Image (cartoon, rainbow, N blue to C red; front, side, top):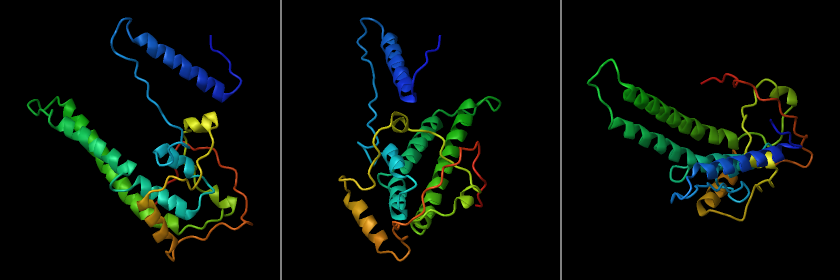
Length: 221
């Protein structure tokens, strides 16, 4: 029978304990194979992880802060998106050396390679779009606009993080963990004439978010 829990956090905790018990059962008695448990640090403990950047990218963040986060995730050397792009490319290359065109009517490996290659191309396009959007984010107004304008565009974020469910403390916008490259990027952006103004104390309150839609609003390319 399904159990009833008093809160979402209690239900998530019970589900995690259930999964741990199942994982323990999957290891045969007397087996030398240890139980593999993946540790996920909280967003507040790792502000430069993708989860940490998502937590920092809230509606009250300044344009400069959001532009810096996009630059961090899209950075050529250590950005999460270039790393993901290279991972998909490596998977496509793995499939490439297993191609066999002897049977023209049956080639599932080539179909798999085609999908991976398409995903790689899409990720490259995302990187280019983010490079252009970064400058636009920095030029956005710091204050919230009239809520009537927000209703014309669908909310895109639809997945909650574990920290959202369990109610972990929010990641501060500026942390003590500083990177020299990030400091130089922030300084350059702060001196830019296109940087958005800081929010004033009299800024209007944030509007209530609209419920997530099944598909994002169409955007011109």
